[in-house]
Length: 588
Image 1 (cartoon, rainbow, N blue to C red):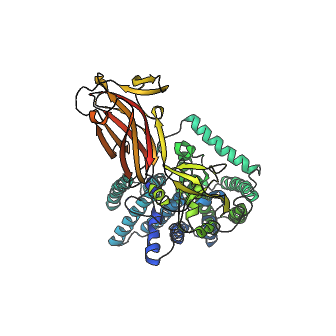
Image 2: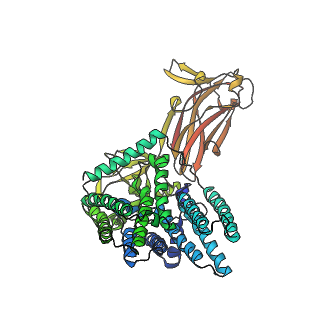
Image 3: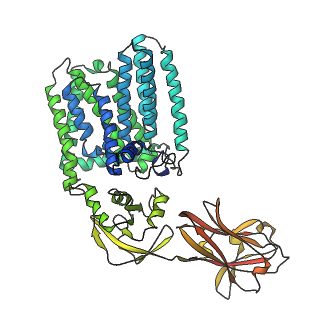
């Protein structure tokens, strides 16, 4: 994403309407000014944001000991939540964490100079807006945060009255955020269905069953990740002990007097509830990466509570336990990578870096493999998921098929390498034997000329116009000149195929007779983008049918980019009986 980054089209990743591209945007500084690789630039940018988040969250903690605990949890997370280091939710919480730091600065200094107050409020608005851009989920956390701040403001002042400057900035902030997000999403080329849909009772039950199944697998040690299982058992024991001590020593009332403790507790409950109700989260198998939010909020709640309790009570057991828990969590991803997957601590960039020895290549593979393969050098290695997967960039697909050398990876896609393979409207012919490279099964393919035949049954048409040809023993399309309802309509369209860059000839096998006059009979055209883009067209009349037999009428066209929904159409005017047999497509 960072390598190909272009605004405004890339406000969101690959034309989507979610997942703001803050990290790729910041990466441009290191790519353009310091000539860093995209990989290094993204890593630096990501960790700068994480450090910013840590600074913000740790500012709420008094004890250095618990600041260290947070650092371990934040930068060396438990294996199941390692996605904090690279997914938008972790970036979003980093920004919210830093905004909390700015809010604290604003609250602690009542005599703050006016220009500093304006600066802090503007900064908070910008950070909140960026948080929502990065992750829509931030709306929930920001709403909870503002409500908690308002509640504690009321409890402190016994009044609903809010500073007019703050109130003005809240209005400006909400307005600015709304219009910026609307503007950014306007460049999305794909809309995700049911992204904001809410689960019903049965779906919530299914979501809980998935979570229950995941916990059971971990607790049974069936995941073959002992540190993950040990961590989970210790975490459960720790939380039980933590709750017992709070209840036994009657500390709950004391803790809820701290607004930040309340915020993270409510945020944990609120976000977890959102995940249970989210159709999108369930559709993605209740993926662990979503629960990074819960991991952060619960961790902050416990750390802040312990930090607060230690001012008044000795809790040595919990103090030592949380350090042990954090260290086991830090070890868990190392063990899992070494002994579960990928069974190596060798950096993946070095593993797939073996592909660089092939030179300038195009790669087609499974969803995850394709992007990993190109990471070592996105300019040298152009890669995409196969066309039945979720393809994020047609531009990259076009670049791949401009390459002389194209390789296919079958892992997580195919069982064997076929002799010929159709991808994105191109035909690929197997060239040589498969081999192992970068830990993947790879085979070279050559691009060959496209030749496809589309009989009537592969196209779209009206069943009422189909007749049976006893001579060819096949179904044909027949439209009578006397059929008024057939006129000024598409009688043939489809088949909505992908087609790559090239020059082509499409041949319509048709015949016409019973001519009523010399006026046009039909319009043949080639269209894309559901008919909004015309690539070629040709009007046919009586002169195109010197004999009463089927003949091919050719229409030449070329494509300057790849399309996913090419259709060949016949728009019928009337003025003669028209018969249709098939369409033949040939690449020049």
